[in-house]
Every structure is written in C-alpha cells, then in structure tokens.
Image (cartoon, rainbow, N blue to C red; front, side, top):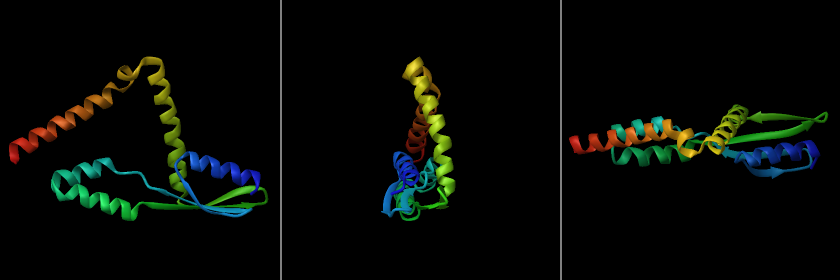
Length: 133
C-alpha cells in the first residue's frame, strides 16, 4: 500500500472507520452516521415504549456510510460520504478542546452545563411519566 494511502486509512481508522477492502492504490472503509439524539428523544416522547426501539432499528438499518479512497498522481482522492469525514475532523478539534478544558479545569467545572441539561431533561421526563402515566 502506498504511504500516502496508508496514512489516510490510519487517520480514518482512528476516527472509527473500519477498512473493508484495500489494495496498493485503493481502499474502502465503512462507518456510521452520527446518532441523532434529539430526534431519538422526540420519538421516545411521542411513542414512549416502542418508539425508542423503533428509532434504534431504523438508525442501525440506515446509518451505514462508505468511503472510497484511491491514489491519483500521488494524491488521495475521496469518494462517497466525504461530508462525514469533514464533520468528524471538525468534531475532533472540538473534542480535543473539551479534553484540554477537562484536564486543566477538572471534570465538573468543564462539563457542568452538559450535566445540568442532562439532569433537567431527566427530571422533565420523570415528571411527564409520573403525571401522564
């Protein structure tokens, strides 16, 4: 496998992609699209018991993403779901920044807004279930 292709495949594998086929000048990798948490919560709210399971099955059936890489004149050419690669690269920078904040400030100081929102949503869900069930 060419060095530039090998490096690109290694980067994608570190982002969670799985190699399917590789040759000296080509590679194909599979991954999954991001899970839509807000849609999942809405479906659970509208259909309390069966909706969450139905959405999980739907996501598993439709979330497969495939990327094809090949070398042309010493450069990597990407085809397929390349938008997902760009999205992952942007998220990687944000993830790295969040990890740096956690390391410098501590977990609770860096993550308190997300924890507060999670607790509020959990409390709201418990209130709704108790009230209307």
